Length: 73
Image (cartoon, rainbow, N blue to C red):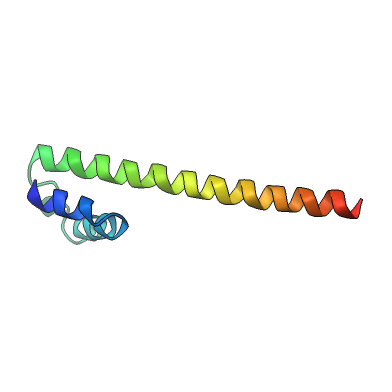
């Protein structure tokens, strides 16, 4: 579990590291059930953060477009 804790403390780069470990050797990342669950939770948290960021970008873009449209109308 130390490797996963270390990767999690690295934030985004830790997630990339874990994903690459998974791609290079799924057996390595999922060597034990507990590590596999921790990896899935780490990926799920990262995916949720990504959705929040993308959602904010869309909202900001949408507001900008609305402002431009109302200004030109």
